[in-house]
Amino acid sequence: METNYNTVNVSCETLGVFPFPNMRLYLRPSGGSPPQAVTDVKTRSVRRPSGSYDVLLHRTFMINELSSKGATVFECILELPGTTYFQSKRIAYFPGRVSLLLHINFLSSPTDRKSKVFGRIH
Image (cartoon, rainbow, N blue to C red; front, side, top):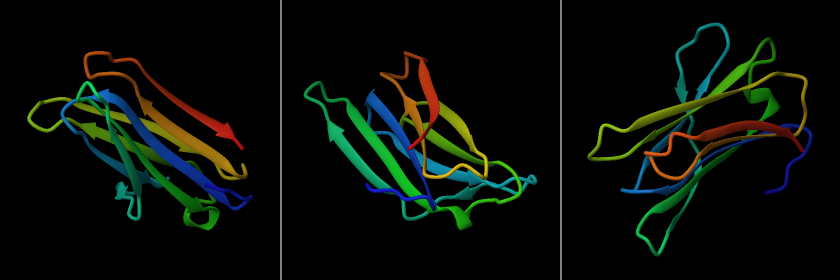
């Protein structure tokens, strides 16, 4: 997806999980406001030959949709149906940076607790 200087791209990804995960993206505005479920999220999923799944959520935000006074925190939640497994990752966007890609990655399986969260200027 193309970006320009007025957008922030946010994605959440999980790799190699089973069963098919429930994933949600939330926006947590600064100032202690309650989290807001992000709508219009694009989802892409692939079932591996092993039966596990890779899932990617993605949304592009216009800069004017985000806080101009402080950090906007994005939170991705991963749950596996039929289990008690739950994982949450957060990453912050600070105003003044342009054309930014924020990516949250849940790696491997739920038994592998490694994960990475990073931001990258495009």
